[in-house]
Image 1 (cartoon, rainbow, N blue to C red):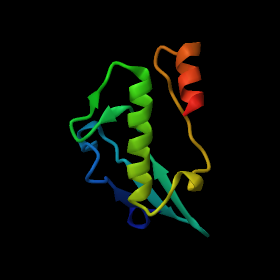
Image 2: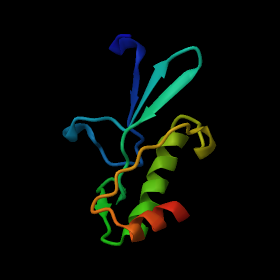
Image 3: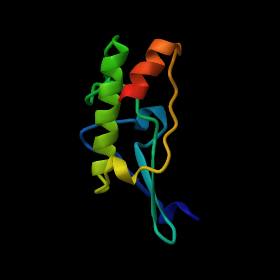
Length: 100
């Protein structure tokens, strides 16, 4: 597969990730269609403001993921895999994530 077959996309509602060397989403052709979405953090808006409250970060993360999915006419029900990284992981944070 060459870069000419990949479609890179940064939804305008999310911050510009190019200075950090990544793209929010990549669509790759297959027998069907695959869309790869970069790690979304709990940062909000184009300024990528990070609230200190973990519960708030999870809500912002899910809103960011919804924006990335919508930019490809997808929904959460279209997601087949998600990988999470919780900084300073503890059971309270895991419980907050599980409830979302």
